Length: 611
Image (tube, rainbow, N blue to C red; front, side, top):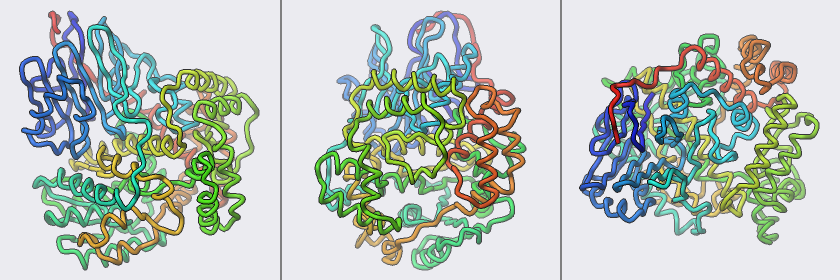
């Protein structure tokens, strides 16, 4: 696993990451398993700045930002293309800044009378064997929004830096400070389009550095990245084309490869094993990730794609994925609650009509789902959720049939023991009482939470690609500058019904990057068929994972009967709480791996005074 860590303070024990390398020019900071080319630093006397990851800044740009370090203008250090961690130090002041999507998370804790920070919560827990925090894991399963419990991580005694914040340490102590606004100002879609195009061009260019390039070639998001990369050199383009999907990704991919110079296309046919939940009877094949990871469930599909990439590349290179394109380029209908809250009733009605046509329902029904969320704020919504957790378990209905919510309560919450539900409710009440600077719009909150969840999951996929294939997976839609450019556009413009990905279409129409037929596309592939096939075919394995021997069950985080009933529904082809099962299985896999395959994180080199 690639990770970074550091220390602030003086200790007699010189501890560092096992196999780690000091960050040049930065006191008491290390990287583990990061290529030297992805670790860069500059310094001037007591002022130093390091970037770790894919950072598009030239060396002279890093040097010029030393002034920002001296002045504490931290946000300026996050404006380069790419996705990276920042370590900045000015004498006794240390700032550690992750990215907006959580691909480079930051955690911290006190140990041995000093402050330790790392991009891995597991590593910090391993300093003294701190266990998993069951209430935090309950929040992960029941709410699936990383920032709900603020600074509480999945590991006891380990704090996390919430999204849009940085870790700041000085002689007065350690604290988190916000560097990113909780909500962006509004930029009209036609005005923002050029900025979005420039951000994506720079995001792809920052990665195309001579390594062999491969890319997804499926939906509009991934096709855009593949075509941008093809402007800079040859691209091995792959399309997962399992016939059970019955989508039109493959015809579009073939047509695009024929029209765009530089794209060499390879379809990836499905097999009996390319379904969800395949291979979970052998957890040794999965990398140990820092948190439960969604790609544990779809690893066989990802391996099929990476096998094809590896077969057509003379050496490992980089792989562009369109992951998170949906999250930044469009928006769910929850923005209707914001329109109602702001008194934009005519616009809300117009949009509700469009969403109703897509869902074959009435506009009144669409607005009815949105109205409760329009009448509350984030803190009160959490208090309402806490009250719901203290009440009786709900009868299951699809999430799309429930009212819109700031923090939807998932079916996993109904599988938990009463004691765990009450502990989670208490934690939510505390979080609501302590909530600082919350966004006023539901869309602003949910956009950020979706990105944080996707960023964490993509990190797990990246780990599989790196450890088993030597391939560097990159997700440009999760870059800071891409996120900023896209989310500045109001959600009701990004997600307007009747217009598919209008922001991307406006950004690239007439730019000569994408063929016109790609920009005119209005369809999108989906994996539901493979999810249901995997549920049916791997039901015995899933029943074992989440049954009597389940680690989640032992902690009261699931109970056996409701899970068994949900799997029976799946076997019968009935609607199923797929997202809830996905979360539970990934968490169970993670807990079992921590018991049997947790890596050795640290080594003690000597016992001398250190700063």
